[in-house]
Image (cartoon, rainbow over all chains, first blue to last red; front, side, top):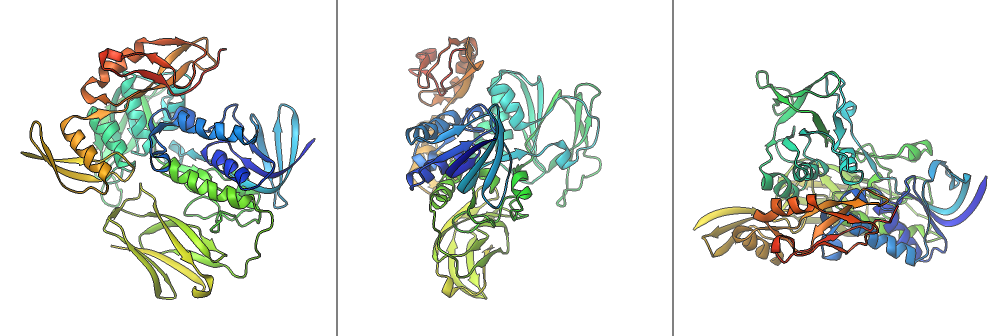
Length: 411
Length: 121
């Protein structure tokens, strides 16, 4: 057993891990170690070869690999240590991590831990598509990795289920590779990815988007042969008589992401069922003191820019050794039209950065923050859609808040 | 003059900007949130360009591909032409991020540059 003592240990070297590591170091943590199970740094970024990263944060549009390089360079300059090909087996409330790599078993004791494990893709089995079980069914991110990292073509005739961003980006990518991209099937009445991706990945290349449609059956013995799609009604029920069969050899799934929190659950960190990530306070500290969470294991972000911003806050507070004892704690309750809000609790009077997602597209929505019926903040937005996270800052004085803070969005 | 709705793609908000245009002039009617949006909508209506990203085969590298981008946005009607040039190209490892792999592709005054470094095997 190899024993290591650190100030801050970060699990995951993707964008959340890198940004929080740099921030922890710049805010006074002496020894910062980042663990990752892969043999490269940057997580998913090296396979995201399209641009659009850093627009809000840096005022310029970088590709995924370029964005990752910025933080990797910064991390190396600040003498952050990386342990790659290192798999975390577990961690506990005493801030001890057990990990394994080629050198053997590691026992890492830290002043703080930052969780940055990212997320994983939903598969066919998460959404229960009936039918045969042939090869040729991929999650969009796996297809992206085959295509962009390993130069493997996944098939010839491609249908995509789900208009999430990775699915849209893969539609264009595979079109560029000369594959026949038949269309994107989306169960909702609107695209679930960012508007710019719908324009630049589908509209530009006349790739059809079948809204209010879903896949009802998978057909094929060894390799996928065809897929049945059908129109759905308002309640997502298949409308009889609308079914049609599309001949294809590959089906890509871009049907959502699940924050990766197996380790967190094992350590008994409290999880928010709405985000799928840990419940955190305004400093991104989880229900276990000293353990922080950032990146896509906290919530699935839509841009790396806002992900990095929050990760830096997590890193900054993880670097502080003596934290103020909390006097009281209030809950933040997601109200009308809100699917989730972060932070879920506040235990310090300070400026709080809120991020939330709306349940459906709303024009001219008004964010309302209330406590026991008393309104103390409201802000009108031009519009809000589920694909765009809503962010706002608010000075919170705990003495003014009665028990809970309710955040809602009015039409 | 014809009316056209342009979805702004400068940032993730994706403003729907309404413009009126003929062959050479364009005026903004409504829907923008920032100055960048005005500029984008005019260009998009009259002379659309796109940043192009793809990948190029690497010979003798630790990875079989290097990701690339166009040094400037490519006119929309030239994208498929440029993509075909990219498909034909290859490069020997090592490759450094920022390295020009195809110079002045299709005489457009645009280079295709590496966005990743690939070490030699």
